[in-house]
Length: 129
Length: 499
Image 1 (cartoon, one colour):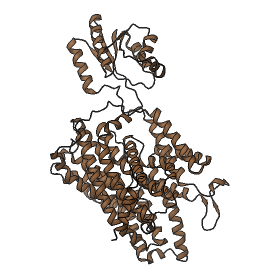
Image 2 (cartoon, helix red, strand yellow; image 1 turned 180 degrees about the vertical axis):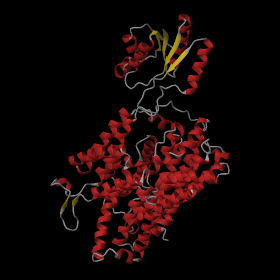
Image 3 (cartoon, chains in turn orange, cyan; image 1 turned 60 degrees about the horizontal axis):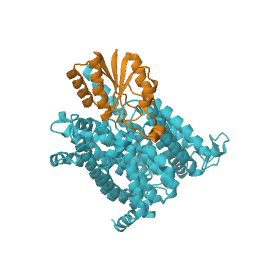
Image 4 (cartoon, chains in turn cyan, orange; image 1 turned 90 degrees about the horizontal axis):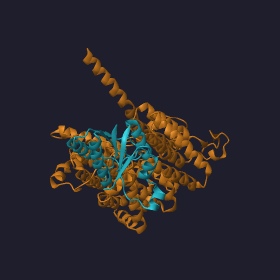
């Protein structure tokens, strides 16, 4: 069993990572970090660069938590990709960061967080920065 | 030299409409340069229909802006992402990306902008003095000279283009065959028309260019759309330091000169010149081991060279009516649509077009220098657009454009057909450039060849008898023979080494 963190290089992502570290310590489990970049374009802001990943690894080892980083890309279905990874690693809990998205915004663009919360059969811990 | 038409040319450029289209052209060119895969030839082909609604000179000013603007745009992705946006920016990757990794991305982009400006400007000055000279010389050219020139153009494009010689010749052969479709201009008999009414006028150049370059490249790029996703690089401090400018000033000068001369050669153009400038800079450097480790000369030289070459490749088009590379071939097509035949008479008959286009490049280069650096952030944003969104839009624009040129649905089918051909050619490693160039030159070649044979009474030795065409034949023979001799020489020396 492992704690799964959905990570983006944003304030929400950082909050999810910190909550994930705490959760992994409490449960005495390892931490799996998923940073799934959106494929199909030459550049994506959803991908964490090497420097920030190195900082995450350093922070995890300081906290004494074993960290596995995965960067499986997704094309349309971020929630599905994260849930598939959760099944694969048999996650005990999924930690995600939440940002505010308006009703209209949700209608137009959808919300990966909402889909994760509704579709997941595992416990989901949602945190805000 | 009479400078009055040169000054009048500035009058043409400074008209608000022309300034606007120059700005649009340069901006679009940079945008396209940023997008990997979509090259200047494709862009010019896709945007051809837009130019129908404006004056010829305005149209060419815009298309030229796209061409040299793209040379700079390609640099941005080379430096920031190790992803050359254009073939001519491939060598910039070596030192440009190394500089970006050292946190000097801004300096690399800044020196590339300065180098592009200097290279472009030097080439325009060369063009201003050199082109009328060539044109006045070419006024004496008759059909036999044009026959040999067209042959020479096709051969040079095939031999110095990327990829193997055989594959380039195959592509050129297909292009020549396509050029024969339609009613024979001399006898009126139908050739390869299969009783299809729309084919009896021959295939128009535009559907071929739009299909092979536009649709074909989009299809091909969709294949690897999921590769190479990267995190964005942050750009700080764009202006290079005084020491860096001093260090690269020699490289910019040498690169510009190399680019200017290689750009004139048929088939040379921006790609070859950037390679040559980089190689030369590495060779004459005091410490060549710095190259590839973030040497600023390694960015400055090829970037100056490719812009100089993009500019000087207009010389054979505007003076001889012979396109030197694929993009210029598409611009040649645009001129023909506008009812302007590029050739030696252009300077005399349409001085406003000739000098308008040439002088627009000064203005365009200033635009490029001013806009390139502040817009880098926007360009990087554009790279975040996914192919799944970008490709369908581009295809739609292409097909609508193909229809609007002649209001013909048949043209849409032709574009789709040539799109499929272009895709398959890329799949098997055939470059579409030689095909399009051979198609354009094929029409010229056939008419010129048959006219000269009528002139000579059917005697092919007539080509050697005339002084200019005889010289050109000698050059032609040298172009064919030189690689063969070089090959033989190599294998001979190798054998000696083995003994």
